[in-house]
Image (cartoon, rainbow, N blue to C red):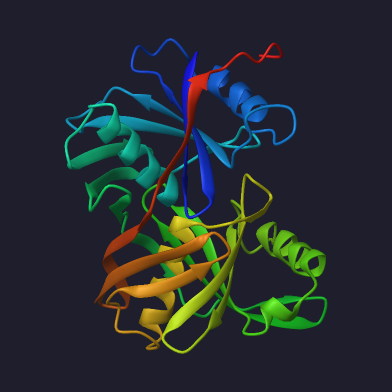
Amino acid sequence: MKFMKIHGAGNDFIILDNMDLKLDKAQLSKMAKKLCAQRTSIGADGLMAVVPAAHGGSFGMWFFNSDGSEGEMCGNGARCIARYGYEKGLAGESMVIETISGDVTAERVSKRQYKIRLSDPTVTKLDHNITLEGVTYECSYIELGNPGLPHAVVRLDNFDSYDENVLREIGRKLRFHESFPKGANINFCKLEDGYIKIRTFERGVEDFTLACGTGSGSSAAVFTLKGFFDGSNVRLDMPGGTLYVSVTKDKGTVKDIYLTGPTCLVAEGEVLDEDL
């Protein structure tokens, strides 16, 4: 079985060609858990399968987290699969990727830079503070697409002074908090001079990742709505690199969320995992 591994700002993915639909979602879920394991297999934050377009797009994208759960969409994953689609001749420099949460338009900006349009928010709650063990966290909640991809945006301007394990535990407790019925990705944000510093605890990975595209889009949207940015080319710095987001304000929410950032071809080969 052929695979390609691509990362976008450190968010890494295994991509499989499933255009013949020989692999169903149950098989891919099992494969995601095996292949994404860091020590016993290829290792990645998630697995994506390229499938035929169902309604006029360039191709479809099935996304699975490293725990085997199916995700609605993944921003950096979509940028990476756009790179895959271009490199493999499935699409030109502009394309439409069909996902569970809606169609994603993608564009090749340069050899390694790719831009996508994220789904518009279907839920926006700017004041959604949460109290944990006597501490109240300044939190907003946003869902992108339908079904919505859930993100909590937590302003925590001193998060980089926290012990890593302490911050991870806060992220885990917020991720499973009862106020998020389907769980949430937790984005800890520090507002710097002209940009946002961000760490994301991802649902499905159940840990911090080096970058999160939809988390960056959600965070830029929230702080634009709160008046900290004008929505034009908001810079977001993560451990894995820098992403840029542009949004347009629209009657208490935002629309036209564009995410731009780097992609990197890491490896291409054949899966030989005897445990599959």
